[in-house]
Each structure stands twice: as structure tokens, then as C-alpha cells.
Amino acid sequence: MDKLQIQGGIPLEGEIRISGAKNATLPILAGCLLADGLVTVSNVPHLQDVTTMIELLGSMGVSVTIDEKMRIEVDSSSIKQYFAAYQLVKTMRASILVLGPLLARFGQAEVSLPGGCAIGARPVNIHVAGLQAMGADIHIENGYIKARADRLCGVHLVLDTVTVTGTENLMMAATLADGETVLDNAAREPEVVDLARFLCSMGAKIQGAGTDRIVIEGVKRLGGTAYEVLPDRIETGTYLVAGAITSGHVRVKNARAEHLDAVLGKLQEAGATVSTGDHWIEVDMRGRRPKAVDIRTAPYPAFPTDMQAQFAALNTISNGVSTITETIFENRFMHMLEMRRMGAEIRLEGNTAIIKGVERLTAAPVMATDLRASASLVLAGLVAEGRTEIERIYHIDRGYAAIEEKLQQLGAKIRRTPG
Image 1 (tube, rainbow, N blue to C red):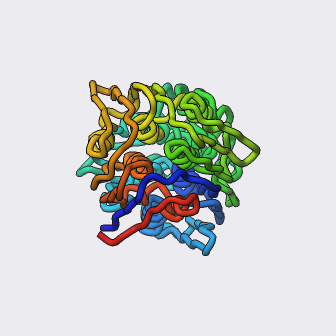
Image 2 (image 1 turned 135 degrees about the vertical axis):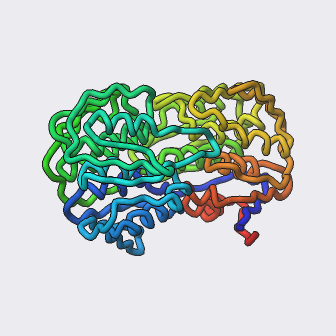
């Protein structure tokens, strides 16, 4: 298994281009199942999770072609089965997103339950209950969700909790349902909005995406389209924190500042100078040590859980004491234990971490436990004295395209080595 080796202590300087958003690409690829024409998706990130979704579509008989620019063409007219096997679903929970499209368009679906996850349970009961309310006959057997429906019917749903994939699955299913569907307590994330725009480009009728009430008027069919995925706000935030934690100066291109208000606000609170333009964001922390900032995660537009680990790394070397409270996932502090091995002073109390900033971290062998935890260990390695070695980096490859090359462009001494 590959490892990353990082020689810390270098302020990052320069600019990089942000890739397309993983968390928009995956539902959009699932949504291609709704179209009875050719769909072309561009600005797709080169990630393991994207490869898994392509493999999942291919296993159903869907025709998927990729060019050298990671532009993907999907033709679902060749589909042969409506089955998502455990072997693929267990590696990526977003596979559950094929359930709604398969059921809405083809009237049947058999999708493996995702099982556990390193950062928490993330149950799919809201997906299932919503589809049942729309008229689907669903039972769970041998670890699989087996669903059938002649045609789904529009319905008013109040989601028990704010769920991104639940909102996306039900929104996709509703596009081909008979009548109007209303989703209350819907997720407001930019990736949900991007999916809605993609569906509308195929002929769907959706209003309210980006608010907590989404209204979908079902149509008889959806056609082909060409669509460009929005930039990845979490990758954007991660590289901006990399600039701040190293007392550097980093500009990211192909980025949307309006999707990162909470993150940019916390970077400014930490003492960074933040500048923004139409498609770029710049962070400047030259000559300064970051100040400790308190973080509390919550659904969008509040501070994203996917940026919690990166700010934990920033706080470990900041001036002062900070608290980080995780309200979304119940088991998302495993990176804290690894950063302690690097000299971080962290005390855990339930879902809150109390971090006392130290002047320097020291290199140590550490192990990645999930995607964003991996990113936090890379950030810690960038400032640690000596050479940090990070194992199990397959987690990083699920969400960061060519992370070592991008950091090298900013002057970091980082390289990938065989395990």
C-alpha cells in the first residue's frame, strides 16, 4: 500500500487549480440513469470514488466512456440489470444514490445496504421511507434493499433529519414521478443545487434547491444533456488551510468563494488575509502564527463537517486554546489521536475536542482513518519538524486528485512511495 512522506517546515507559496466536486459528481453520475439519451459530464475529478461509481454503472450494463480530459459519456439505454452489488457498495456509501433513479425510471432496483462507516452509522431509513411514501414496495432481504414500483407518485415529505444523500435520492426519484413532490427539511448544500441544475438541464422541473423546501413536478421523460460539475469546495478549503497552517500564501483557481463563507470567516478569524475574485480565492498568512478558532459543525450553510479535521490541524499549532464540536457524525475524531503522536495537545470530551496550540509539531509515522482525517494528517505533516510518513492513503485518493502533485506545485516536499 502506498504511503506519503512529507518533509515539514516549508511555507507554501503559489497557485493551483481546484478539481470538480466529488460530492456533486457522484449523484450526477447516478442521475444519468434517469436520461433516455446520451449524457456528457465534464470537470470530473480523477478519484477512486468516481472510478467506483463508473464501475457500478458498468456492472449494470450501462455504457460509460471517458476521454483524456476526464469527460464522461453515459448511455443508459444498454442497461441489463438493476442491481448494485455489495462488493462495490461497501467501498463507497454514495452507491445508494442509484436506488431512486433505478426505481423511478425502470420500476425496480436491488441495492446493497452500505453497511458501517468509519465516521458513523449514516442510516438509509430516510431514503427507504420516502420512496415507500411515493408508492414503492420495498423490503430488505439478505442485506439488500429490494424495491419495485409501477410509477412513483408525488407526495409531501418532511425529512426526519437533514440528509444530503437522502435529499438527492428522493429528488431524483421525484423527477419522473406522477405529480408534485415536496421535500421539506431538505439539505441545502451546493452539491444538491448542482444536482438539481443537472436534472433541470435534462428537462426536470425543480424549484427551491438551495433552500430547505424543494418542489419537484414530475415529467414523463428526461433527455440527454452536457453538464459541467461545480468546483470542489472541500478541496478548496483544504488547500487554503494548507497555506494558513504553513504561514504561506496560496491562491486557488476554479473556486467559488460563495460556497465557503463559514470556512473563509474562520480563516480570517485565525488571522489570515483572505481575498476573493470571480473564480479564485487567496489566503495570506506570511509572517504570522495562526490564532486558535472555535469550530462547531452543522449542515450547510454553517461550518462543514468535512472541514473539521483540517481546522483541527490548524488549531494544533495556533496561538491559544480552541474547541471543536462535531454535531454531524459521532465518530469523527480519530485523526485527533494520530495528531497527538505528533505532539498535539488535545483533550476529547464526548463530541468536543479541546486543543491547546503548541509552537511546533514533530514528525511521526501516522495512519489515515478516513478521507478528511487523511487530509488533516497531511496538513500536520506540512508543519511538523522532520519527515512524517502517512499510511493507508487510499482514503486520500477517494477525495483528493493528485494531492502530492498539487502540494509540490506550492513548494511542499512531499512524495508518494510504495508501501
